[in-house]
Length: 286
Image (cartoon, rainbow, N blue to C red; front, top):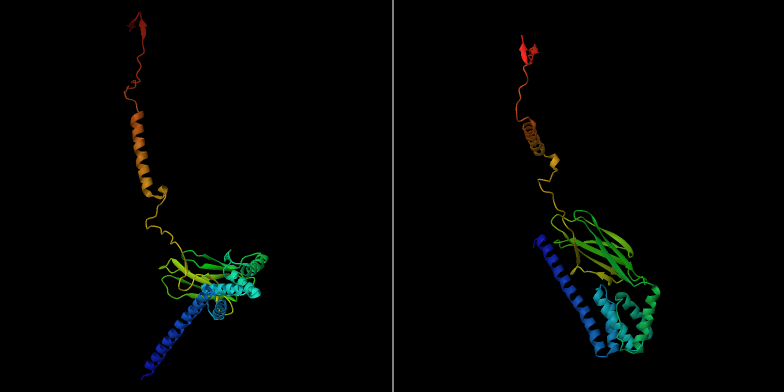
C-alpha cells in the first residue's frame, strides 16, 4: 500500500472513530438526563438525585442540559429534606435561569431552601447573566460586545464565534469574563448577514450563559449603501446648457424690447432752412 493511501486510511479511520465516540457521548448525556427527569416524575427522588448529579459531573454541557439537570437536582434534594444541598442547587439554578419560579403548591421542604436561594441573589443587587451587543456597518470593521455578570465567579472564560454567511467556519475568539469587545472583520462584498454565538463556560466547559449556538447562531444584517449613478445629478448652474438657453432668452428679450419701445409714427425733422422777411398787413412784403 502506498504511503499516501496509508495516510488516507488512517485519516478516514480516525474520523469514523471520532464520530462514533461523539455520537454516543451526546446521546449518553441526553439519556442520563432523561433518566433523572423520569425518576423525579416517578417520585424516585434518590435515583433522580444521583442521575442528575452524574450529568452535572460531565464536561461540555449545553446551557439547556446544565439548567435542566440542576433543576432536577435541586427539586430532588428538596423532596428528600436535604435543605442545604437543595439551597446550593437552587442558587446555581437561579444563576443559570434567573426567571425560574417554584410551583406554589409545593410545601416548605421546597419553598424554604428556594427562598434562601432567592435571598442570596437579592443580596447581590443584580441578576446573573450575560449581555451581548453587535455593532457592524457595511464594509467596516465591527464589534461584538460581551458583558458577564457572575457574582459566584463560576464563569472562567467566554468564547465568541462569528462568520459572514454563507461561510461555514466560525472565526473564534476566547476572552476573560467581564466586559469585553471582540473585533469583527468587515463583511465581504458577497455577504450582509453576520452569524454569531457567545458561550460563557465554567471550569468544565459547560455553558453557564449562552447566546446562540454553533448549530443555531444569532444573526444581524448590514445594509449596503446606495451607489451613486453614473450620471450624477448636477446643479443647473453647472450645466453649459443653462448659459446657452439663458443667452438665447436674453437676446430674444432685447429684440422684443427694441421693437416694442420704438415710435409707431415717423415725423420727419424740419429742413433747417429759414426764410427771412417782413409781413405787411398779413401779406408778404417784398
